[in-house]
Image (tube, rainbow, N blue to C red; front, side):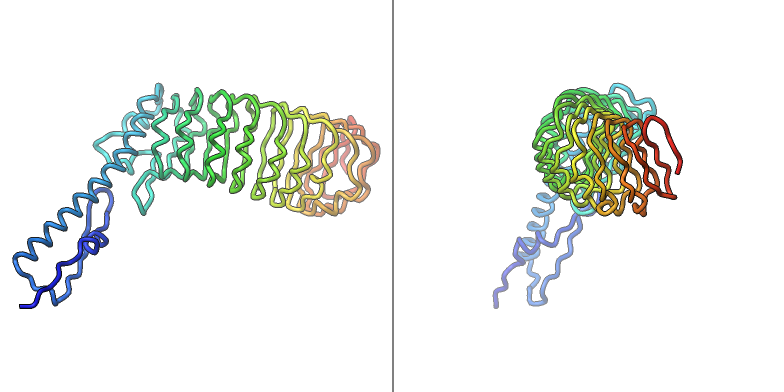
Length: 356
C-alpha cells in the first residue's frame, strides 16, 4: 500500500478566513491522491479544529481589546444628552455596529472613531491608546476636557485627528510627533497653552495643521519648512512674533492664516514667492515694511490677500492689477500712499476704504 502524506497544517491554516463579525470560513482542496482512511480523516478534523480555535481566539482577543478601550471611554462620559453612547454601546451588539465606530474590511478592527457633534462631556481615558488600528479620530464640537493621555501616542496608524471646539488644556504633547502617518492635525478652539512642540514638525505627511484659537505663544518654529506636503496652515489668535522665512519652502501651500497675532517685522519676501498660495490673511498684527513691486509675478493663484490693520507703508504696487485670480484685497488701516488698479476686486487702504 502506498503512503500518502497528510495535508500540511500550515496549508490548512492559510485557507481559513474570518468573516464578520465572528464567523470562520474554511475552504480546503484535498488532492484526489489522498486516500480517505479513517486515520487521515480523523487527523484532518483535528487539525481543522485546532486552526479554528487559534484563529477564533486571536480574533476575539483583538475585538475584546477594542471593545474594552471603547467601554473605558464610555465610563468617562459624564454627559450624553442625546443618549447616543449610553444606549448604543452595549456588549450585546458587535463593536463594529456601535454608533460612531467603523471597522476596517481587512482586519475587522476599529479604524474610525467619530463622535463629533454629540454634545458629550468627557475626558479621554488612556485605554483609548489600545485602538491600534485606528486611522481617524474625530471628537469635534463636544465638551471633552482635561489633558491628553500619553497612551494616544501609540496610535501609529492615525491619519486624522480633529479635536476642534472642545476644552482640552495643557501643553500640546510632544508624542504627536511620533504619529508619522498624520495628514490632518486639528486642535482649533481649545485651551492648549505653551509653545508648539518641535516634534510636530517631523510629520512630513502633514497636509493640514490648525492650532487656531488656543492659548499658544512663542514663535512659529523654523522647522515648519520641513513640512513640504502642507497645504493649509491656521495659526490665528496666538502670540506669535514672527513669520519665519522657512515658510517659503512650502511649495504646495494654498492657505495661510496668521491673523490676530503679535507678528512684527517685514512680511518675509518668501511669502510673496509662493505660487500655490490662494489665501493669505495676517489681519491685525504689527507687520511693517513695504510690499514688493513684483508681487503679481509670484502669486499667480492668489484670490484673497488680507494684510489689514498692520503698519505696512510705502506704495501699493502699481501692477497689482495683474493678479488675475484676485477677488479681495484688504490693506486697510496701514500707511500706504498709492493705489494700483484692479477692476475685479475691492481694495481697502489707509485709514479709509476705497472701491476701485
